[in-house]
Image 1 (cartoon, helix red, strand yellow):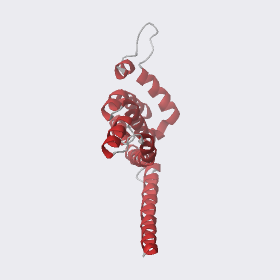
Image 2: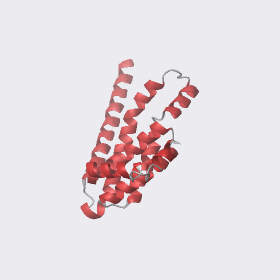
Image 3: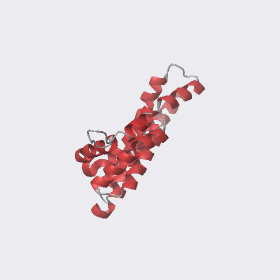
Length: 177
């Protein structure tokens, strides 16, 4: 019902645009060229609120497509970023966390699980948004654009975290022996 109200909200006596189109106008005006960074987060938040990637995509695909058209990029890439963000949002989706917590014997710990999965969600959404930015603006801004630099920075940070965690683990093992 939420999706149907959202999508079928246009027209009427007042003649307003559909909600997704009105929101797209505002989002395109605010974010402009940087929208691909945000598209994945909208997908993830939609999955968190709606409970599934499918409903998130149904609700926000028209919105994402219209923002893509307004900023002058191939809008199908923006909708693809929506879907990728929705998939990432499944890790913080309340329904999925409750189900996984019940299976793992963590009943009552759902809030802690969501807090612990927020960082991986943000990492995943920002990385894919950066790659998406690089793809949609490749023709205009070349390969070495802001998205490429942010994706490379994220990759370097991930390698650093993995490398330092391995050293910490080795130190703990040596300390125990």
